[in-house]
Image (tube, rainbow, N blue to C red; front, side, top):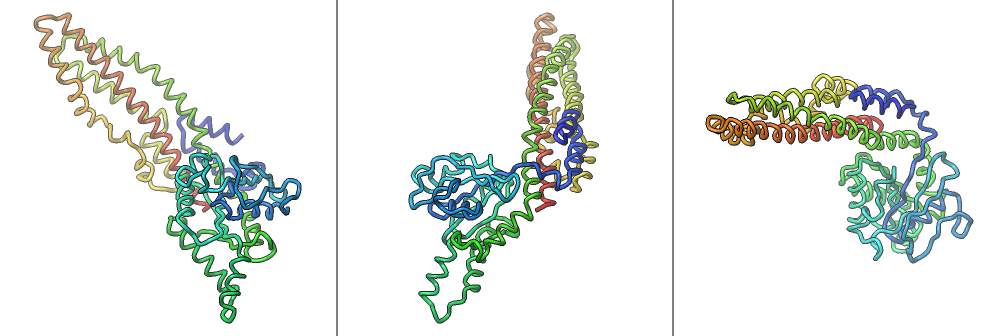
Length: 389
C-alpha cells in the first residue's frame, strides 16, 4: 500500500508527499521485507565458513555452504537465514581469481542487486578490500567488515612472541587496522568484527550476530529507500512520453505564427513558447521553486542541496535568448530578407526554422527536467537514508 501511495504522488508531481508517505512507515512495517546480504571477499578468506557459522551448520551438513581450498564457484549461492526473518545470505565467488579478476569483479557479479554487504578478509586490510568498499559506497549501500581466522592469527602470535602475548591487545590491533582502512574510504563509524568461524562463541562472532539482529529493520528500511528511485523511474518516463507527444503541436503552432511575414516574430514565438513550456515542465514534474521548497522542508535539508543536482537550471528563459540567437538568428535573417523578394519562400523558411528549433529545444528541455526529477528524488531519499546511518 505504501508503494501505491508513493507511485501516485510521483505521478501527480508531488515529491514532498512521496517522501512523507515513506517517512510515515514505522521500522516494524519492514518486518516482512527481505534483505539480500552478499558475503564477499577474496578467494580463501573464509566466506563460506562464515556463512555456515551464521547458519549454525558445519561443512558437510545438509544445506551448508561448500568450503574448500579451491574456489570453483561461478555463481552466487543463496542461503536463507533460519534465525533472522527475511534474510538471505549470498555466498559470492572469490574476488581476484582467474574467473573473476579484481578489475571486473563488481560488474561480472552485478553487485548492485544486493542490499547489504559483508566483506570478509583473512589478512590485513588491503587495496582489494578498499576497492570493494568504494564500489559499495558508490552504490549508496552499507557494509560490515569481518576479519576472519582470528584463531590462526592469535596462534601464530603466541608462537612468535610467547612472552609478550596479549590476546585482547592483538584483537584490538586487528580491529584498528581494518577500521582505519575502511574509514580512509569515507565510511563513517565502520563496523568491524574479528571472528573465527570455527569458534562462533568467541571473539566478535556473537557481537556480529547481535548487531545484525539489532540493525535488521533499519537495514531493511535503508534497502527499501534505495529501491524507490527505480520504482519512480517508469512513472517519470511515462509522464515524459506523455508530454513529449504534445511537443509537435506546440512546434507546429510556433511554425504557423512564424510564417506570418513580421520581422522577428519567429524568434519571439520560439522564445516565449520555450519559456512557457519550461515552467510547465518544472511544475508538472514537481521541481518548480514552490515544490522544491516544500520538499526541502519535508526532508529537513536546505533547498540548495536539491537544486545543486539539477542541470536544467542552466537553461533558463534568459539563457534561451543566447541559445535561440545562435541557432535561429542567422536563418531568420535569411528568411526575413527573402520575404522582400520571395514572400512564399520566406514564410516557409521562417516557419520551418521555428518548427524545428522549437521542437528540438523543447525535447531537450523536457528530457533534462525529467532527469532532474530523478536526481532530486534520489537526493531527497539519500537524506532520508542518512537519518538512520
